[in-house]
Length: 153
Image (cartoon, rainbow, N blue to C red; front, side, top):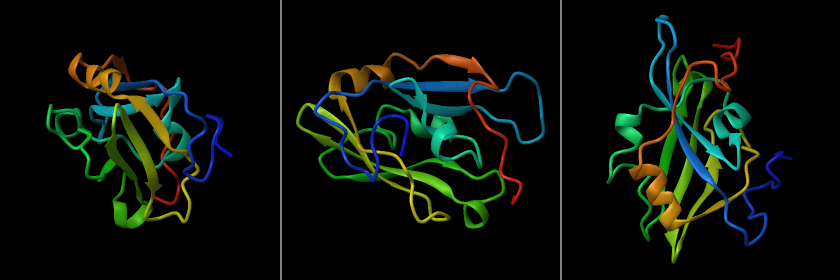
């Protein structure tokens, strides 16, 4: 069970979750180090919890005003992270993003390399969600919640 209170992609309750899109900038130059987006829901680093195999995707890809994380009536599957090696080797983390009235929903968590991703459905207030993208995410240096890549890679 996920420590954030749910399992099996089901909503926990009718309360809204809080989202921070943290941009992590490598503190020191390392081979393969890159700027990444780390979604934090209710204080939980989603990538550290569910996908330690690799970094989050680049903010230039995920965070533009009409980018992949923009919620619309039609569900959209978004890749949040990819394994250090490749998706084909050790997987990636995907979520389905959609708008539902005044809410934005993240659900349908998927990793092609894993049968089950133990994260619940998250429901955000659409105004707060837009503001978290528009106002610019907090920037931190590397080491803020990232686990080492899996030894299989």
